[in-house]
View 1 (tube, helix red, strand yellow):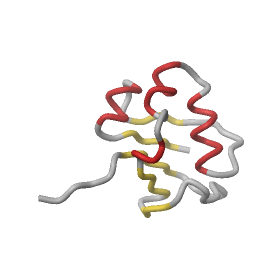
View 2 (cartoon, rainbow, N blue to C red):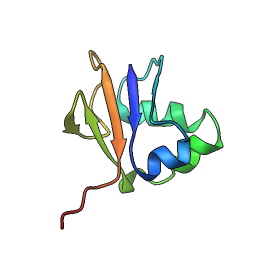
View 3 (cartoon, one colour):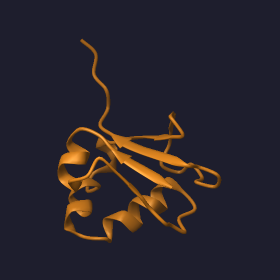
View 4 (spheres, rainbow, N blue to C red):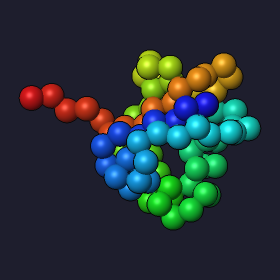
Length: 81
């Protein structure tokens, strides 16, 4: 699946997106797999309460299943102005 990173998440990880092969059942499982990759992922996902996730361009929760999902996007909460 294509995993995309935005704003400071992208800055910490160092890439805007990547294709990820995963056996994760949920977004939370995917986050745990990514955290365990290396320190830059651990830093980016240290506090998931500061993150939002979208699955196939629809806002979702971290307990959402990944079955059939083609795109996961992680980003900080949006602010208006």
